[in-house]
Structures are given as structure tokens and as C-alpha cells.
Length: 115
Image (cartoon, rainbow, N blue to C red; front, side, top):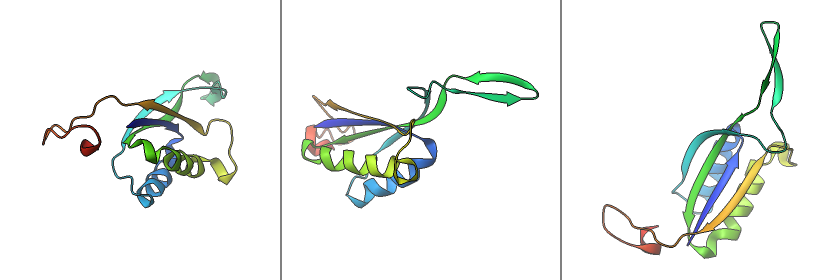
């Protein structure tokens, strides 16, 4: 079992969700987060004053899947999250971690049965 964590641009959330749904992934947790990487934020002008926006709005997706689905999930997220289909700085990152145990609270099912 694996936990795929993806950080993407907020306006790409619907595209990524729909693409994941098409390959049979239905359980996703989405959280609004802020952060920066190579973008390092940007400067904006507000009421005549310039200020730096260090942390940019992002969406963090968490998807628990079987190990056999990792490559397809990564491929779908990578394709759907790219800006203009070609990719730009700030499009996001994908992290994959091992899941040692999963329990469905309602039924007590464990591991892959709980996914």
C-alpha cells in the first residue's frame, strides 16, 4: 500500500480529480495549503505599496492506493496538473510513501480491504 501526496496549483484540482476518477480512484483528501519551491513567491502592488508574497496558495492531495496503482496515479496527476499541457515552474510535486497499516473505522477492515 502506498500514500501518494501531490502538491498542485488550486485551479488544477478539478482536472486532476476527474482524471483520477477515470482510472478508478475515488478516495482523495484535498487540503488548501501554502508554500513555495523554486518559484520563491512573487511581488505584488497593493494600494501603491509593493510587497512580497512568499507563500503561494496550493492544494495538497492525499491518495491511499495499492502498490500496483502507483505508476498510473503518478502519470495521471503529472499529465493533468501541468500548466498549458507543457509544464511550468510551480506546477507541483508528487511524493510516494509506504503505508504500513490502514484501518476502516466503520467496519474494522484492515490494509487493502480498507482502501
